[in-house]
Structures are given as C-alpha cells and as structure tokens.
Image (cartoon, rainbow, N blue to C red; front, side, top):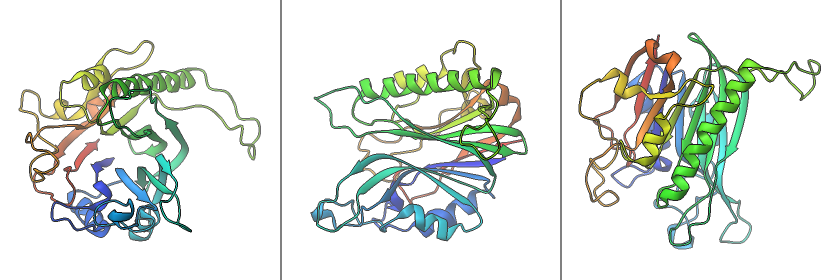
Length: 290
C-alpha cells in the first residue's frame, strides 16, 4: 500500500501559479499511489483576492477537478471552513481535506474537530476526513486532517479529539454491532484497529501537539511517527520553509506527519519527504507499507 500526504495549498506553488494538474503529476512521479491525502482543497474560492478569494484564484471546485484528473479513483471530501460568498449569486466558500483512492472504500466518516474560544488568535473550523479502506495489508482507517495554525489551545484540543476518535474506533473493532439488514443505513459498525493518521499538524516536530499524538492511549494501540521509524537517529526532514520564505520567514522545519498505529510499524517499507517540490508551500510525504 502506497500513500502520499500533502498540504497542497490549493495547488499554489512557490512560483505563485495555481496548477492542480501539476500537483497530480508530481504525486504520480513520487510513487504509484493507492491513496492521496490532501489538505487545503477548495470549493467556491475562485473569486479574485480583492473580493475575498485566495491568492491566484483556484478553480471553482477542486474536488471535482481532482475527480477529472484522476478518473480511475474515488474522491472523498470533508469541509472544515464553510462560509458564505462575498459576492451575489456565488457558491459558498469551502476549505477542507480530500482522500483520493483506488482502493475499495468501506466507510467514510467526517469528524468536526474542537474549536474552543481563543479570542486573541484568528482561527478557522477544522475537520478530519476518515475512510475505511480495503488494502493489501488488510483493512485500515486512513485519516486526513489539518489542525489549527494560530491557536495552540485549539490545536492541542484537536489532537485530543483525534485520540478519542481512535479509542472509539477500537471499541467498535472489539465490539461491533451487526447491521440491521443489507439495504439499511444501520450498517455493520465493525472498524479496523489499524490506522494511518496524516496531515498538516501545524505543530513543529517535538512540540506539544506532536508529542500528545504519541502518548499512550488506553485500550488502543498508540500512534508512532512513520518517518522516525524509517529514519531512526537521522535529523528530521523539513516539510515547509525551504523555498517559500515569505510565509515561513523562520526557515525550514517539519509540521506535516504520517502517524501509524503500532501494529503497522513492522510493515513500514519506506517513509520519505520529497526534497525538490515547489508546487506548494509544503513538500509532499509518502509512505509504503508491505
């Protein structure tokens, strides 16, 4: 199973050009991925920046654009920030995450993450998109998320909720409820314990939110950092701040991570960061499980 994780910044590269096709092309060049987890995917933000849009104006619906670019795959979406248009007769402005996969999708869950009041900090609503996939390594939960940038209080609360959701999933794995009948929405609640949780955590390597993700979890396998497993003792590979010095004036560091449950660590064949990409302010990561 091969997975890529990438905060693609709506396809806006260091050169200031928005090009979702370039994102897909680079992802394909990294590996023949089974799963592509993306953050900062937009819908309705094609307004010009002076009217409240994002810089260089992405297409009207990037989830639909991904489906066109990757017709052999399923595109799953989850919206964190869902806001009205700033102009008349426009679609809502939506900002969230995607999971694109060729694997069979058993379940899709969309988790709104905590948003405790922190009036001194700008913030937006955040979400975790989860898909239960049938992979060669067995059934696995894949979660794509993007945590708060400005507020550490909100960021840590969001990590704690992700840990609670993992506990809940493991409870369903141990004690599933049978489905009501084949055509009912009351389906079988069984879910796998094995999970891959990835995304932009907006927490530097070994900062508070990162460390909380690695703490033991009662009655559930803890998460481990897949990159650290694959590169024991090596300096951490940066994922931001290498080429975009305007947004990241403090220089390179890592804030994008792929965490896996402990039962998957023996299956890690590789986990790396693309050292060259300039198609977003973040660099993509990839994971291979065998």
